[in-house]
Length: 301
Image (cartoon, rainbow, N blue to C red; front, side, top):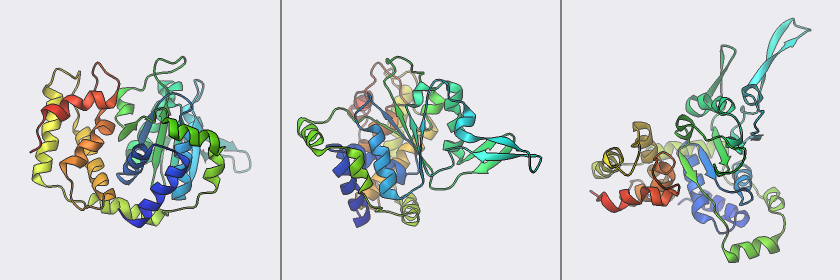
């Protein structure tokens, strides 16, 4: 791992305590040019993590609080009539930033949720027949409360599939929680952070991730995993071709973070729960439990 990534992860770990794997997966998702979904109960640090990454990366950041009455125009923007010029002028919404925190995304209606679909897939938004490109890098971090909580709308499969990864932070360990209790306000620590990777460096890293080598044997293993999900009765629906590409890209990013220029089966296995867990429907909601049959029954080529 290069020094810049090490410094970024080390700084993030001073704010989000005891969540080294989740932080590393979040950065991996960014390097893979994906979007991140964080699902967990309120108060475990989902919003703090997004603020921390934005500060360390020096990117333009905007939080959008999703509520039941939010409208697509509140996200994308709207045209307002300018009396002086006697014409409508488009006023960009908060989505025109580089890191977007879609906070509590499943508290909004599906209509509002869909306002993110085009932006996440095509890095552009269309308003009143005109298309506006988004500035790159563009990274959406969405937080989601458990679906059994009051006032939530489940994300449709088409929306879930736009997220490269889904992670859960979970409750802190006893040691980490003691440090939190003794350490005071975490947002105060965020303000003290300095930028570790600038925009140009981040874009260069993303390009280097794309160049990471994948052997035929690793591709065979990846295809075997995908085929298993489509043929097994453990799942209601198998992984799509887009999901396969997402798994490949995430594995490349993880290999890059490990300082290697070639993907190993271990890279595929470590990102598999985060990439496939929210795309596969089974009797469990835990990502590790969902993908366990794949890791147990699909042999490495």
